[in-house]
Image 1 (tube, helix red, strand yellow):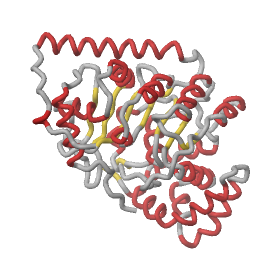
Image 2: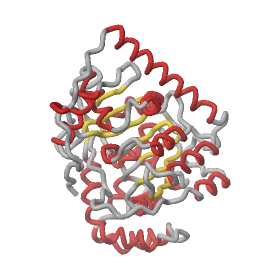
Image 3: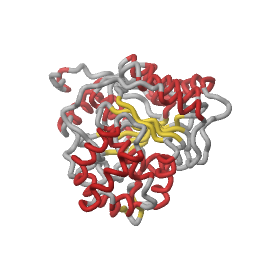
Image 4: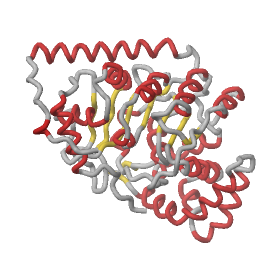
Length: 381
């Protein structure tokens, strides 16, 4: 797509204080209505046990097994490990949310889900290789009592034994052999990555699940109880994520965390995507978390991203009113808000009190994102 320049866009007239106040009130009301619309879809009693070590009821397990893959094409780049390094910025927002977690990507989901106390993870990724990553983790994490024990399974001398473990733990999985081959190809990469992330801290706080014994224990319990399920799907399509919402609703669980990584910059907010978001059984406590890349937004470290938290009712309201048709519009909102909403620590918080920005600011936000590169930053295995 040819970039648009600010000089080609007619500048919108400045809002009067009264008009700005009205717009803020309108979107706050819309966010409240979004929460109310979501509420009737929730069951009074969740059928997902709060204890992460307890298996799901058999009928819930069968229902999850019906969620279809979409069979997407192989992307040009794969991200089996995360290149986001400061999820600890999100801990205060995620704490004690509980419920279900819906996200994309690899083991960064484990960090955020552990911080939130999530009870069920339903992960959907466009890359067909990512489900192999989570199956590999399921097998190896399930039999490794500590983070050090897991990391040791990626050492060169442990290769043959780890392959036997994967084959045994996934004996009933039709993709067992694919996972073994995947481990064989990628073992060195995961070995380096997990060792590095286990050492990573910020002001004494571990920034990843593999570096925190309590976080690791929760993820291990969830894996052993088969409460981390992963699918190959397109969040803008009509099968996988739509079915995730249906299954979560039937299980009576509330989706409290929706994580996009930086995927939103690669697609518009289509009608199908909006329906997928509306179909998730969320409530007023639910959050959307994502990362964005823009030259004017602070990154908390080298080769990192800017982290964004948004209340789910507000996100739904902006989608329904047409205020958001692409992620560059939410970037415009962040840039316009300034401190303290946009902090120097690399974290922004979008709320219903913020008025969506006019077209000129949206185009400027898009240009800034392009200047910083549409592709994700380079990874370091």
